[in-house]
Image (cartoon, rainbow, N blue to C red; front, side, top):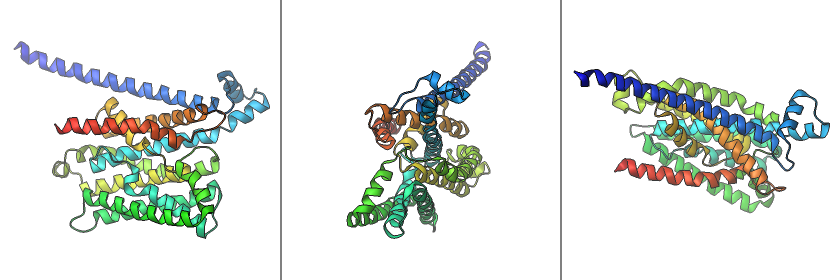
Length: 346
């Protein structure tokens, strides 16, 4: 009898502990994001104090300090948007494919954006961050949708074909990019800066241009959260619970394509954010995709902004592009993910 009455109380206690842990994780993520935003507007080739930032916000700062701080607003906004898009897209990709190593590049988004920019620069005379963004966006979208179409077409369509389609398309496009850039040095000089991934050198025009695509992707992601929970149980279980696995995958892939395309077009291809953040978020809040998507939208921007701050101060007065910093930080995350896959397989 004692054992019978003890089990429910133990379950309630575990549930309360889990809820408290998730609430603490959300508060911690919000605090980390706030810290990253403040650091992003404080640090650079010229460091400003927190008091300087407060004076700028209140409108009482010296004009020179105001100019320095306000020049960092666009890259901070872009860092938040790109980090959010990449992290949520990575979470969706890992949920849809049930592959812990999936990230937006799996759909050929990065290769599509790169190929589009190289084509526009070499043959259409595109230049400048705004022109680059407008050419990168359709290239990324077309590549992502093409991979999805090939991967889901026919009776043999599925996750394996999706991955193979992404790999093949990326390989073909990268070969095309190398051929064009090697034959046209002026294109290579323009392309090599964008392809590393950087938040600097862009203004609010770029930010506002990609916001509609990011907003559409986030809306679809929010609507896909509950369905992804059922999909994680397997196609048969998802169907028995009233979900349509094909439709859920299509929605998740469309959302990941829009988000990945918006981020890549705005700041260039940035590696590992879409891979590392979903693993961190899952460790914090568990397997519920509704919580994972929301938490990714907080952790992703914080990680990318902090990486950008590191790139600005580590080689001062020079600057290390954020794409390089995230590659250094993301490599250990990849190793952790691989070790986790091995432990789960045992």
